[in-house]
Image (cartoon, rainbow, N blue to C red; front, side):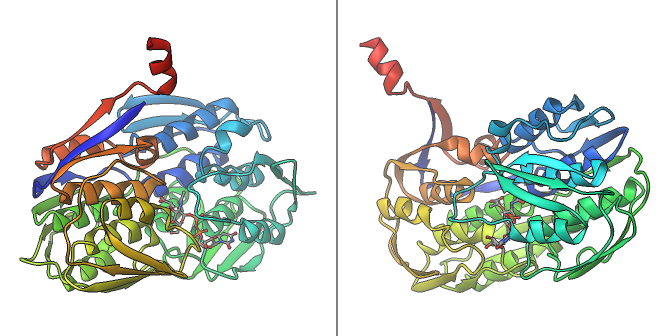
Length: 429
Ligand code: EPZ
């Protein structure tokens, strides 16, 4: 079993290169199923959710070739619908994009229900609403989602009940080669929605309005292969920005799109930090002290829910009482228990976190409860003088490419260790 061991107290100084966006790469990888040809994808992050997705696509007949550590050739010429591995699909959330791409290409789909971080119920009713609007007959039985249709996806108008990143992407993918025009209203505006639209347009699709809440897709007969570079990961970048401030350091974060980080930048400035923007980098310098602030998570361009746990770790060491209102997921607070083990004075009141700052955190054995919660306890450990051990680190490695190496390069005393698990210990005795 692997753990991350942090000897906290060092401020982070130096420069870090941000990897490609996991949440942009996932829909684009599955959208390759629409293309009877080869796509070359660049700036792919080396994280387990991506490796799992490549395994899922290989399992349905895709040929995937690594060209460099971050560049892959994906050839979906010979893929077949309804053949994806149930147990692989349930490992991650992003596998549900296979529904949209199988439906778009074959007029039918059969994919196991997705998995992903455990934030309570994560329904897919809006995805189903979209597929039905496109002429699909959707059933969910036996752990599978199945889509059937008489003549394949047919363009239509869809008004989503709420802003859903996944549903917006899934329907956009299905509509790219549908018969006719689709208009998605109340669409999610996240940068990874724009990135997937740009990828599809590079393959010959006709999508306009991505990044606004109305997206228009004129279905085309056929898509062709292309070469496409994924955008930088705004959540990885935000995580390093928060870590720099939490450790009272100064870090230049390279290979970012500053506009994607504006809500995080604004909040860090409220805490007293200084953020200087360059074309493709931000320079973050902590203030003398960290002032309290209040945060409400919202769909883009609001403060991202995927940055809430990291911000909570920072605000534990701020002066005064801070609040975080998690308006997107009803329960992504499991990491709070782990911060409490380190002396954090946090209470959860419904969807509101009340954080009493002013006291340093102290080391304790903790675990990653989910992807972003895992990075939150890592940031807390970086601020706590002494040795903290973090277990369940596979959850962190789902979405962060070499985070330990990147933190070491910034001066953190952090390392990954392998410890025998109980079964190995029992065998040794
Ligand atoms: C994506 O999840 C991301 N995952 C999440 O990142 C991110 O937190 C989320 O978007 C919001 O930005 C991937 O991209 C793989 P939603 P998704 O559909 O698509 C509700 C991470 O850490 N909803 O925008 O599942 C839903 O329950 C992960 O990288 C419905 O009610 O998010 C939630 O309350 C964690 N019905 C809200 O909408 C639906 O059909 C937003 O969910 C779909 C969603």
